[in-house]
Length: 233
Image (tube, rainbow, N blue to C red):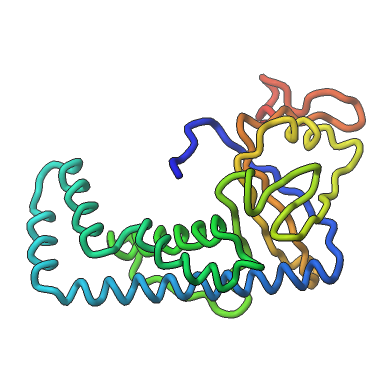
């Protein structure tokens, strides 16, 4: 899915969860962690095997010598596609894994997990990182969807995901949140945090547009007017 070209901002809302819903979310994050590690293990195995191939090393060295960045980037993409070191190839790999967990993790969320792995792997491949790490138990604390049409989505002030419907907490006098929710939701992200020793769940809405100006709840005036510091956006 192509990246949106419109402006975006994030609104984080606390979820009003019940115990059984928290148990389900924790289970799904653990499944997502296993999917993440499986994808990472697969792409690293492919990369290790590919680097041992004489033809790959020869092509790689020839591309490195190219002077034009645009042409070099194009050739790298072609080379990676040839040896299944692409984001799309990971999407293909994760498909049968997701089907096994379809009652908990939808296909779009699984694809975003694979994309997350690939983005991490690219840093290794382009020498921006010395290594990439598998996620240990409890270390994967977020998952996200690809759009607000299916999978993880936000409707009627509630998080909807594979049979779960969890309302968010919105204060009646929170004008900023109410104004923000008038904007289109591009996609959603579920976040798990530890607050004062307790696990709390949140939904992050990636919204189209720019943040509204923050309003003083007592006076109704705009906070930080232009010319008097940062505007509340």
